Length: 449
Image 1 (cartoon, rainbow, N blue to C red):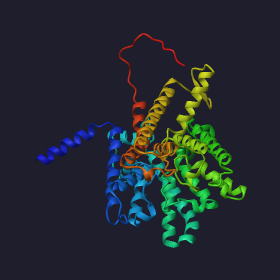
Image 2 (cartoon, rainbow, N blue to C red):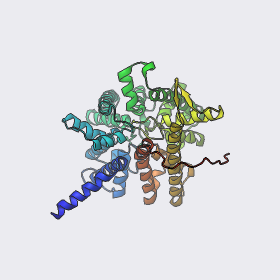
Image 3 (cartoon, one colour):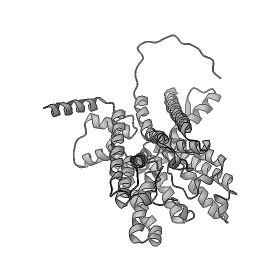
Image 4 (cartoon, rainbow, N blue to C red):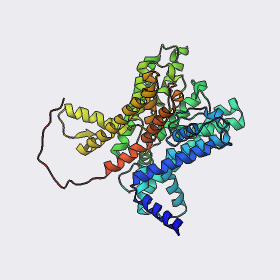
């Protein structure tokens, strides 16, 4: 009887949690379970600490890709399979995955489950939730299957049938979920100029980063004029950021002997630049030694990592639409306009306030994390800032500082990875929840600037 009472009380407390708090709890439980699994003797080759496996689990669940050990060398096939499952659950959304299974079994979803699903998909309404969930799985599994087949064409001849096929599947799942985990310690450096890898892998994390709302829009409407404003902003801004990163990286690194300067012909340099332009958008793979990039390039990469990709996607960052609204709001201010106009649609003050809230919270998290990590680590400030931006954007690119961090530093990075993945969803709950003011005060005035 006592056990039943305790269980009932625990269930009541869980049900009283808000949807974002419950969602965050689900992710934390998955991280702990993943860390326990990866610490089992059959999952690793030995010598790993609890912190090592928890860090890997957190990185996989938040689809970040930062590592403190060698994924291919320190984890067995079972451990690598566990990381793949964690990436898939973290990328597609743990709750989304559970709801899809329940719906497939014919189980009706209650209001509570739909609330949690709405937060996991970063939606503000319940309309077309199940249709969006179906799109998530059809697109994800389809892209991963096609990507694995194409990558196998390259990996099987180099590594043999068994290892080659497994590498193709692992990297396809990692790429689509924007996780950045690789079975090789140097990531995809050996395939820096391979045409198949430089097409398939970027396409996977670009599609995964667009967001399932955009993909659902494309699948159902198939006409630019019928696309929603969100989809139009995402598609246009994604192209702008990709070409900006491509051109800027090529210009800054063209003569750097540690990166593009190592290649003799212009075509190879442009191919490598292309990959490095799209991977900071939370993908995390690299085909060069990131630690060799110039300071200016590092700053540009950090900016792209903080922006990230799309809402309801497998990516992190403040999101492309947030960045776009920030730019539009700035232009509108200097033009003395009270509304934002884009694609014959208008955005009011509410949207700007939401964007400001998300951006300010994100910057406070990043700056606080850099401060705390720098207290106990004496490494390069730029490399520390780079790792924190990578963690918050759930990217996984590294300049080599993460493996050198002490326990406190790793805990900070783990916290930032978690906030980078779950934080925007939690903040979205408050953004989508409106409350009317009961008391109105007379207007005041402050001086700005």
